[in-house]
Structure formats: structure tokens, C-alpha cells
Image 1 (spheres, helix red, strand yellow):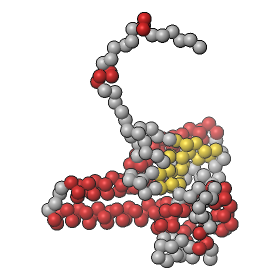
Image 2 (image 1 turned 60 degrees about the vertical axis):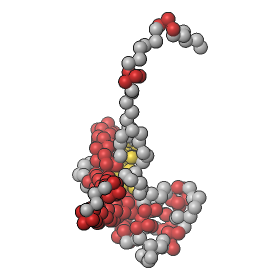
Image 3 (image 1 turned 90 degrees about the vertical axis):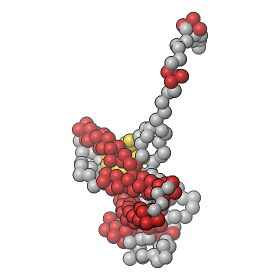
Length: 231
């Protein structure tokens, strides 16, 4: 068996080579291919320690089916952990009679992260054309993530759907719906060719900014003051 379940959260020796520092995605891909793993090995991957799965699920060069397997496992583990932490925090707050800022901040942070993770989970469960894969998942609050519509391991054409202001993974279902629309329109235009669309919320989007009342009340510059354009 290529993969042996590690103990004490340590990386299995066979995977150490993948996580070596300074490797390019191409070098990782070559080492991954040498392991000879296939989708049939998914149960063995899911049995790996969470710390290993977190690295594997975000490692460029690893097959996307394996990254999806690892990230889904981490997603489920984090949801269970957060639900437990939230219940403990809420019980502790009620038992102590303290509903002040520290408890509120802790509970709000847990609820924020849990809401995003549950939204990602719901997104993966949607039935639509094109299989869905969780190809990245970070431990930020809220987490950053990417969901592909279509198989990235076989796709010949890939489209990235990148969101704008005020978008977080708490909106993953709606943003992936937009990616799904792109995928479906491409199918109408190009038939069943191998392709994928990535619903990518992989950065902290900027907040929406509104112009101040002082700016909106500014008078336009008189035409006579404007400089003529010269090349």
C-alpha cells in the first residue's frame, strides 16, 4: 500500500517529498505522478491526519481529484470542530452569566467561520451539469476557497470567475451559481468539450466604498479651466 496512515499527526514518509520547500508545481506534479495514486485511493487519503490533508488540498501540482478529496475531508472536520466550539462558547456564556464583549466576539467569530464553511458545503452538494470539486480551502476567517465546475484534471479550457467587492465564501453558493451559468453557456456554444470554470474566492475582496457627501456635492470644473489635451 503506497499510503500508510500516519500517527500523531505526522506526514507519511511517502508524502514528505511532495512537501519539500522550494518545489515548483511541475516538480510536485512529477513526484505526485510517481506515487501512482488514483481515485480508488481516496479512502486512504481521507484517513490521513488533518494537518496533512490541509497541506495536500492546497498544493499546486497535486491531482485535483486528490485535492478535492483532502479539502472535503478538512471541510467536514472543521464544521464538526466549530459546531462543538460554538456550543461550548454559548454554554459557557450562559452558565457564567457573562454576555459581554469577549464572549460576543468569540461567538461572532465562530459563527462567521461556520456560516462560510456551511455555505461551501451546500455549494458542493448542488446538483447541476458539471461535477464540482473543492480545489482550495484555507484556514482564514472567513476561509478562502475555490470550487471548480467541471473536471480540472481533464479540462482543456479553464475559465476563472473572480469576484469583486464585498464577496466572501459566505457567498460561495451564489458566486458558484454565476460560474455555473458561464459553464452552461459555454456548453451551448461549444458542445461537450472538456472545460471547467473555477469559482475563485481566493483573496480578501475590498469593501464597498461610498463617495462622501462632500465629494458628491462638488461642482463640476468650469470648461474654461480645463486644459486642452496635447499629445
